[in-house]
Length: 465
Image 1: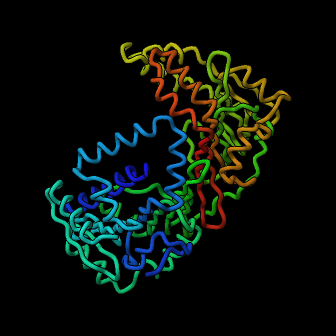
Image 2: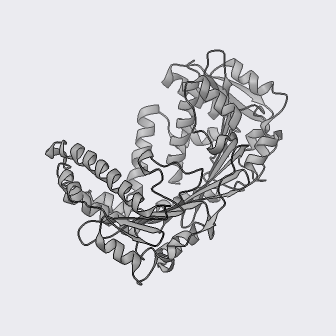
Image 3: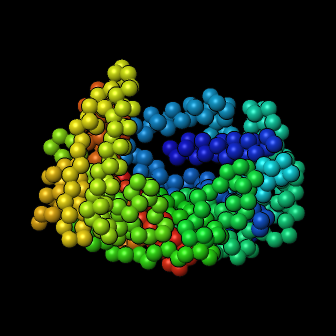
């Protein structure tokens, strides 16, 4: 099956992560089989990743069907397979597939005394001798030693004995953790992959490593993060969930009123509540935006038009602030583009940016600003609107976007991709015909967020047809 090459590459990637780390049961709460290795992972695990490695599963069959829609899928997969063999000397059929079993789990453990985390891979191989051979080949390719152990019907593979001991000697498992159960309770029952991270453990580990995650809004404490990847007949969907504790509650979901005003045929739309504490705005735009705000791109006679609609407390002051912010941004972009060598095919971008102007109009409490006067006229006119746009309705319906959200992003890929190709050609660098053909099956991309109490849900769906 074609999915075997991608899956093989994923398996080797996990092995590479495992090796990088050594340089220094129950099912998921959702009731599905994927992630069963959580029954042996220790309860204090920082993160846990599960990948479906059964190429006969419905998920990989769906992936294969999606790949068939792209003209260059055979060439791409052949290239991946050749790369896999060249870089690792591993063959999917003889080396990888028999060694993995139906799933591959990766456990990230808390930082050790050297300040670095340990990684443990968990598998239930269909052929134990094949797994032993695979481990030996990975060791030979990397020059590093791996250790293995049998733990409650799973084969644990790690870079250090202490990492294995942390798994085999755990008194409580991740599957029995209330935090893990809460985090995975809404995940799909049969996904392609799942991800879980304990908020407190992850923040502590990142602090040890000298980095950090974005701080939740309102001083809240991150409790956990979880996500899944699901392949469907018409696209791929990623759903993520974030639980926080304390701090200011996120703004309530709202029903967009601007979808009935934004012109039909918009190529890209970002709609959000500018007064929400969870929205971080550039300093130059502080106070310039208010209430439900939308930024969208629509096709123009020569150049795409970018239009902003917002409801600030002082529309005229907001218009002045936008003029200043946009002028500064365009000057910087134009200077940077104009300094590029013409041989790079982008030297003409500076003159294009130099011809962009910002127009605006204030109607009541609504500020409409656009790079095109026609963009303002289309918003204020009575023509067809986004809410009735066939592509928008189809894409958001396929994504399962509810009427009330905390904001959404929509892109009409089918119409936007040719436009981008045209813009690239304008600056002297066209896309290869093969690339254009492989972009053609893309239809829409829809992302949205919803909240309930201290839990946020993020979703992204890429529609393929």
